[in-house]
Length: 84
Image (tube, rainbow, N blue to C red; front, top):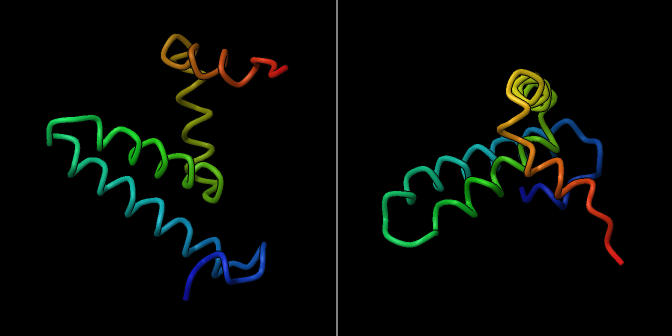
């Protein structure tokens, strides 16, 4: 079943999205050695899906952000940027 067809907040939907996020992330890692930027957008998309739907991934990301703030300064600048 397709994840977005399930009701929001459903545990089955969340599980499907987490599995999809890991799949997209793994596909990005596999594709990354191929010339061109093909793997980078897939890795970012898979990571974004995981961060939105997996509390464990979100906790790990926050922990890493606190330990290494210099790695994520660009991300914070993007997040705080105001759009006209």
